[in-house]
Image (cartoon, rainbow, N blue to C red; front, side):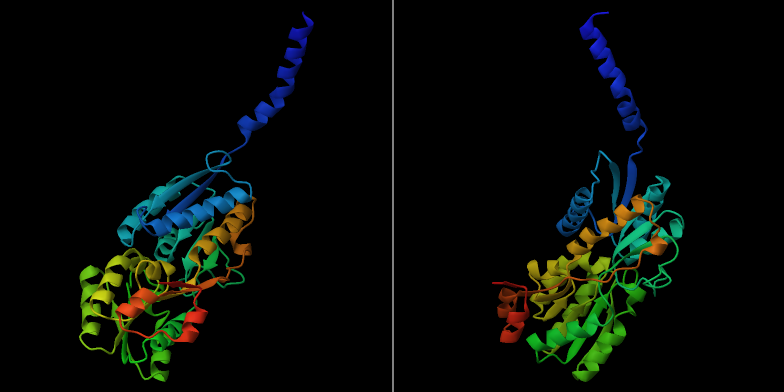
Amino acid sequence: MKRREFITGLGSAASWPLLARAQTQRIRRIGVLMGQPATDPEAEAYLSRFTQALHEVGWTAGSTVQMDVRWASPEVERIRMLAKELVALRPDVILSHGTAVTAVLQKETQTIPIVFVIVSDPVGSGFVASLPSPGGNITGFINLEAQMAGKWLELLTEIAPTIKRAAMIFNPDTAAGRGSYYRPSFEAAALSRKVEPISSPVYNDAEIETVVTSLGREPSGGLVVMPDAFTITHRAPIILLAARNNVPAIYWNSAYAREGGLLSYGVDNADIFRRSASYVDRILHDAKPADLPVQLPTTFQMILNAKTAKALGLEVPWQLQQLADEVIE
């Protein structure tokens, strides 16, 4: 045998163990069920933040991990269909976006680990036994606590002090506790500020229009939009109707203010998606959801749309302008 052939043969033999390891290494599988449609740029940004954070801890989509992403909508039947489809793929872990999505996934599997994001009341919803010790196959990241509803009304009356009636709108099918989670804080704040609290469940755009139009019939109406997949997906008509009926409104997600809403105050949801990658990583390294405490939000932001305030004839207090993380002129 020629020397060159012999060396080449040795090189090939040395590569056998590496090839064998590469061929036998199992690509891990992550299921993702988003609570918003794929056409929503906000939801796309969330998922991008998650995949980027996964890459930073060593997981590359299409190489070391396979991502099975499904895009839902506020309709529960569609969520059920996609949840069944995703669970049937037997992923190693599922990232679950929102209360309604997590509730459906919990019914579909008690064994596949689930990491939820943008969920307000995981204990009240029955997802976990407690925040420090979740138990079961579910853990994750809370976005907003119940007391936030009082803060929203407080901020709304600061920017629009003439408000005497305020409606909280939500969809019972997708909101935490079917709307009951935020109601006590909202009503307590209304009582302290001598504002009439109105609970307004809505299921479609026509019902949104009825509520907002009713508020606009008198100059003292205000709107507090509660967190749920329905309200964020239907944010365009909510913003438009509030402007058309001259109704000051406050929102839980920055997307509203950036798209024309008056004021938003809440968690940086993209940051929650980023943080969730750490739990997915730990589960892929054999950690159990039962041993991973539910995490509270850490980053909040207030966005003020000064252009909308001017259109509504509102004088924005100087202090509120200073508190805002971003002012849209």
